[in-house]
Length: 395
Image 1 (spheres, one colour):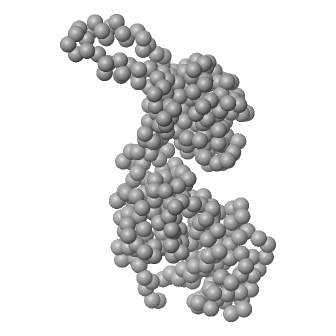
Image 2 (image 1 turned 180 degrees about the vertical axis):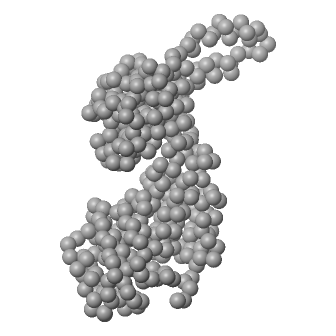
């Protein structure tokens, strides 16, 4: 079998070497200036204004959010967009705990107080006179409400319970895997409003989609327990900043802790705004890089899909050296047309899997003999087929 050309991977941000070294040099070229890349690796670079080459077959985001990637445009091309849910979960969990401690112990105000002390006066007396203003409370015995019980939410819940906190959780779309990971001590809430009413701390861990925009805002923030701490390490738009500022002014909200600084928030004494540090640990960056590179390789080499935000999850063990991967619109009779196109030229289908995700469907087909370009062209000509790749592999 003729050895294929090296696959080209365009890197838009600094990606951990722990991930990049998983791309074998004999089969991959990796760089920041590639004219016709097969795949793109990205962290925070905004790709919405980018002229993404037609050669791109996959995009991998070394992180969970994909707001910086034109997902809908890529879906129309039949290009999966991969992310790394859970790879930075421990890093975010630890930052949530830090945020709760900073708020509960009034640490930002205490730090500002110490920084403003005059060094030439009796600092000991000044400290003793001033420290009473920053007395706080302990986390143990208080209630943490968690909205969103994915990997991060489950880790936060487990850590809070170990600190002696009560945990109330809400997630209408909890997965089976997340449910298994959730500590048994977590009490189930029926709504976001219930979490707000009964929690001393409320931590948000949801994706930024239409349904979660302004999830906490003017319509419900008034229900939050007086003096509670709201923590947002999800996405900026999940919380209505205007409503938060009003709740702080009314002393309804004790602190707002977030990872998204903004002009309206930065000068407020009861806002703890961090510079998007959620995944900014060496370990998280390495985990994300390794995870996204492995997913890209599995797709580019074998057509398998894991953690794509716009494609179904598809896994099929190789049973033949000849594999065809087809991205198509989720419409009737697509499998029939694909099967017919192959049968017409005498190709025998050894095994096939087809799954859908919303309007997108994806098909893997292993056949018993080599596939030539005329067959691939006939598949591409089927109305609704968005992408076709031939993935031969040495047995």
